[in-house]
Amino acid sequence: MIHVAEGHYNGKGGSGCFLIAVPDLKLVGGYNATFTERNPFKHLTVLERAKDYRGGFTGLREGIIEGDERNDHSGLVVDGFILNSTTRNVYAPDNSKIIPKKSWKGALFKAYSKNITIKNCILINPYGNGIYVKWQGDKNEISNNFIINTFYAAISTRSAQPNSKILIKNNNLVFGWFQPGKGGSFGIFIGKNGQAIIENNIFAFFQTEGGEAGYAVANNFGNDFTILKNNIFYQCQGGFYSYMDEDGQNLVVWKKDDMNDLNGDAESYMLDDAGGNKIVNPKFKPDKWFFEKFSNFVASEPGKLDMNEMNQIRSILGLPLEAAKGSARKNWGMPYPLEKVASTLASTIGGVNVNKKFKEYKSEASAQVSLNYKKVDFEVFNKSQKGKTFKGEAVEFKARIGEENSYNFFLKQAPKSDYICVKFLKPGESNFTRKYVFGYIQKGSAAYKKYLKYSKRKDRYNKAGGIRVKGKAYYIGNPSYLYPVGVIIYDLRKH
Image 1 (cartoon, one colour):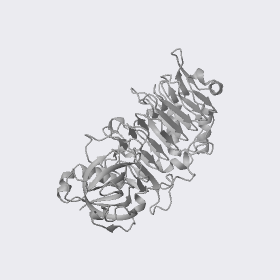
Image 2 (cartoon, rainbow, N blue to C red):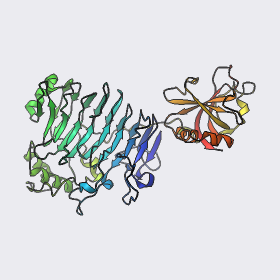
Image 3 (tube, one colour):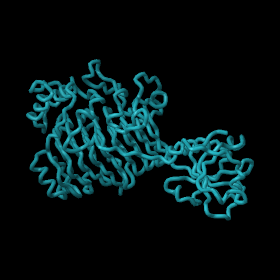
């Protein structure tokens, strides 16, 4: 588990790319500088490319946070971060439009392993998707996020695998742009496999060009496992729900009567369940500068919009009541100001809750930093000495790195689901010795990361006398072992 305070973080070399290559990692942001308060929408923990990045792009991953396709990163939790693509893009000098050929094309968040969670985040201004995952497993969650100003899809389940489930709830998906020659824009693009459970979200301001796309939810593969309940839809230029019916027709729901019918007859709309969906104004007060340019854009081709309601927003913001017409290409894809997201695009009637009590994560490993470790000789673990008496004493000792073990999980404090087991050998012994203790390392922890690093070169470290190990030692309850001790490991260091 990694806890991160507010601030701007640019990653290795300023690249703005954070690669995840271990399972069960929890990344937790949104803390103040002293870690005494956590509110991700107040204490912004921003991941972004450095404005003066000078590195190359060969091998650079697409996402700001991205799971390594070659390594298991299942169980990843990302909670309380800002994924900001503004510095990956290039805009006109007055910021009135994006310059696609010079901007970074790609999703903000990508993953490939099962059971992925992203919540309490702001994903903003990508020239591409907001979230794109090869959804696997039945414990995936996207909740309480702002996904703002995306190209193509805010959330895509196009690569979802069979039998996967993705819970998508309490998100605000606002402002989406069409890419000429590439398509879009969508709030959620539903793939043919898996089940998307879409509840209590707000969809607003997805635009179209030439009558293409601009849908809040697109179900054009006819995925009839989809659930659509209690969502708010507003001012989506192409329509609110597009779908392929059982006869292969692509149809669009964009009128209140049709939405009411959808709520009462889910099956006819290729849905597993539906109800409580509304077409209603969420009462956003978007940034004045941005909204003037956005409404000028859509005024050139209003589509399925209520221009009277668009003018009501302009009036609230102090803008002229009629948007300038014919300015589609003049104002296009401009950046939404990050610092104004939570204050202008939250609603009192649904979607993201910016004022709730945010979960406090407790990491056992991080809680042990202040332990007073006692340096001991390895032989103290021998059953003829104190090996059968350990009850959680904090110890520090030298050991050689042995083999991983998949079945000797003796301690209830270190279950196999969350820990790996490694034999740590007495210094000077070979791999065939009986002189070892069992070390338990929490997956995704700082100690786990160090273990992965040291184990790749364990021959080198072992020849140098091994490494230093810190942790809590316990009797494993099995006296048949010469050293019947298990150590929950909190830190590993070069000797």
